[in-house]
Length: 391
Image (cartoon, rainbow, N blue to C red; front, side, top):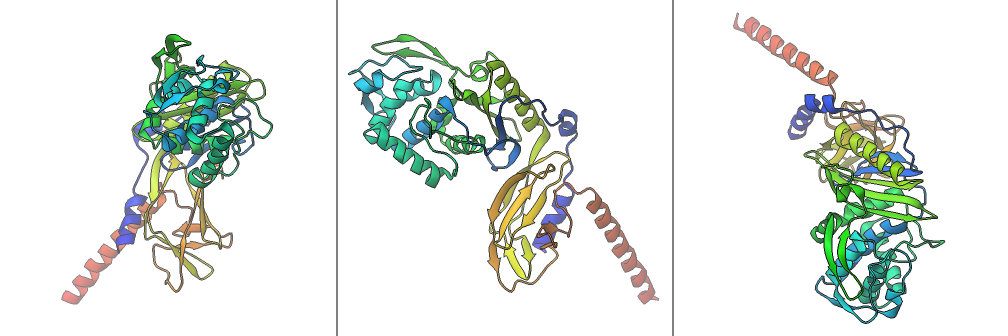
């Protein structure tokens, strides 16, 4: 009974008026070669253009460097700058060999001014050498973060033949990092005073939306990147009262293009989607085998859209959006001998796990009507029979 009540309640969820009024069309003319939107809290993919294509990330690599260093060192550590770090090419914070700075300041220089020299100093202090840092970083990304198509050759993002990631992996790495409070603070610094032997100045974030040069109040952080081989890359986090998004855009040919793409994707994600969930204890059945949910499965779906569920014989449940793009997947636990109940999602011949034998979206406007009519019929029948028996 508990499961039936939950599903009936879900059926009556309807899109809010404000969400309908703010709805925008799916973004077109995305100039970046690769782009993605995910909800960092549910892991759902809201939009993808070549999201799993291997790309050179440039300085957005530093997001991974920062979260690894935060988790494997102390912000108060005093770091002596090596000759190697001081001679690092590309964007720098002009570190002087032999000077000592705190790990916290180096991380600020890394994220706000994209200091490649700071990246090397952080790597050397955290793991003894850049080489050891990179080896452990790649292992961390695979085993702890869970990305599958990323390999870094350095901690800063200068070009390397085997230095690559995907828009999806970068969104996953950023979502993982955003769970850390220290990282969130770094990610959202618009400017800061910088004092060191080689440079006394004010640093301004290179991400135009974080800095405020391109106003977007929902933006909560970001990191940009550029080298000739990757062109412009950009990672942006944003949130409103409903969603927490990460947008990744890669290989745009100009700053104007990449910020235009990012704004379109933010507008789309923040206004066109909302969260829902499949409740725990819901049971799916496929080919005589039952699978149950040990916990709620949260997901993010389009307002007025529908979600298709596909259950594989392995027990992997995959959710697809209205464009038949994969949003997320999870593995269910098989329960042999569990009888079919009203709340089971019985798979069709195409192995689609479907509530009520239909595509379930939590937005079903037709089912409330059926339920309402059924309840009226039952109530009317009960009254009629009661009256007959009383005679």
